[in-house]
Length: 225
Image (cartoon, rainbow, N blue to C red; front, side, top):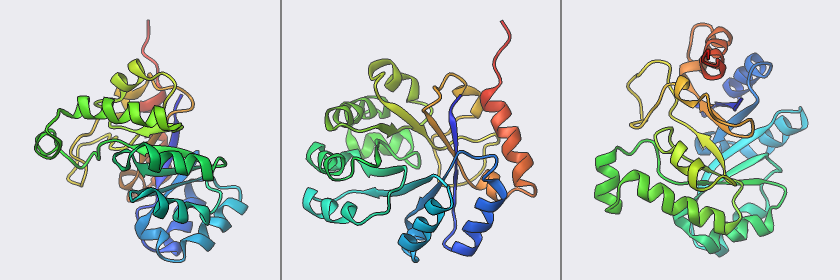
């Protein structure tokens, strides 16, 4: 069964640590994004790691290879780090070379982009673009790729060596930034090293623990033969 990563969608470390304390017995790891990391993120992430928390650092780095190289050299020893696959093979290779202690995950197509927006920007269908960028990620030595649940099976079919990180997973369809979403039931086939990212649906629930348990049940329950 896939790992569960809870996104700390806040810019307050006090709130982030409250969420971690409440859910660390239920979640496998926690995602720290750019808004939170820009607020004393280095020190606070190191403190989480020291406390035994696995951190998914979601910075989505995207710049020329030398700038990204300078950036990653001083990052804490997190478990996972995201970069944009559109930054290219040389950029990603630099990350793998300089930080072999961190699993590099390449972001293919943001789940905030609809199919129409993706075609308008890239002149390709989301599926073709994701496959192309996943191939670049493989060539760069990436541990895995961030991909929506809509393209996840295609990536697994063509690139079995890649691990999958799937955001935009919802038990109920709500109004937020994610345009391309799937329910957890559609991802029951994921492998144990794959990761499903879930955020506000859990952290903003009246009972986050109960809601996360319900989410995990939906994700992990197997169909009867």
